[in-house]
Image (cartoon, rainbow, N blue to C red; front, side, top):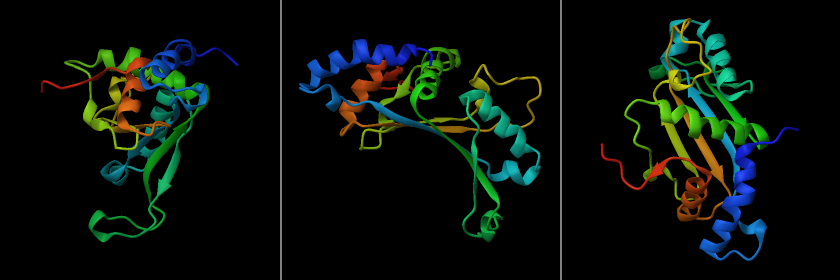
Length: 186
C-alpha cells in the first residue's frame, strides 16, 4: 500500500485542529471523509449514440481511477423516452486511498486550472455534513485526452463525511484543502 499525502495531512494536521476547535476528547469522534460518489447522468447523450456509453465510461475510469457502474432505469417514462433497463447514468463510489488521491487531485490540480475559478460555494452543504460539487464539463480534468472528445458531459461529486453538522464538515474540508469560500462574488 502506498502513502497518500492527503490522509497523512488529515492525521497530522486536521485532527489536532478539529479537536481544539470543537473540543473533541476522543480521536474517533473527529469527523472524517467516509466516501466520495461521482455520478454522471447520461440523458440525451445515450440517445444520440450507443457507443457514447463506452467512451464516457472510459473517461470516468481515467478521471477517478476506478471502473464506473451503469445505472439503469427502473421505470419506463414516456416523456423522457426511457424504458425499463435502459442505461441512464454512471456512478463510482470511492473509499480509502483512491478517495483521498482523487480529492487531492481535485483540490490541488483540477479546480485551480479552471478559468475564473474563485472557489467552491459554502451553500453546497446538504444539512447533514455532506458536500456536493456539480461540474458542467469533464474536460477540466487533466486525465481526459482532449483529442478524441465527441461528447461533453457534466459530473456530480458528492463528498460524504461523518460530521453531524455543516459547520464541522466545512471545517474538515477547509482544513483538508478544498477551496471553499464564504461568499462567491458572481
